[in-house]
Image (cartoon, rainbow, N blue to C red):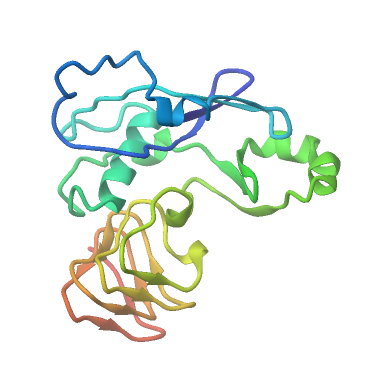
Length: 206
C-alpha cells in the first residue's frame, strides 16, 4: 500500500506480505487482494491517499523509487534477507522526509498547515525523519521492544531478542539470534546469538 499526497509524491509503502521470487502463477498483479482492498482511499485529515499496487524489484540493483526502497526495508525486517546481502546504494535519496504522526505519515508542510484541525482530532507528531519505526510496519515474532522509536524499519530482529528502552537498532543491522540490546547497533552491524550489548555501548560498522 503506497501513500501519496496531492501532487502525486510518494511518502511510504507498506507491504503486508513481502516475498522473494517471482509472482505466483495465475496471480494478476493488477487485481488488488480482497484483504487489503478496503484500505485504499483518501484520508482528508492528513491530505493523503493510499493505493494498492504490486512491486517487483532486483535486489542486486540499487533502489529506484520510494516503493522499491521500502520493499528492501520490509524484506530485512521480515528476515527474508540478512543485513548486507542486498543493494542499498543511494537508498536515502528515495526516502522522503516524513512527518510521522499518531494517525500515520504526512508531508511536513501539510502537517504544519493542518495543525489546528489535527490537534482538535487528537492527532500529534511523533517524529520527523526519513525512516519510520519498525513496529508501525512489521511485528517480529517473539521479541521485546520497550520503546518503538528505538528500532527502525529495516532492522533485522531475531526471535528471543530484547531491546530495552535505551537500546537502538538501525536499518540493515540487527541480531542473528536471541540477544539483549541495551546499547546501539549501527547500520551494517549484526551481532550473533547470545549477544548482550550493554547500556552505553555503541557498535559501529566501518
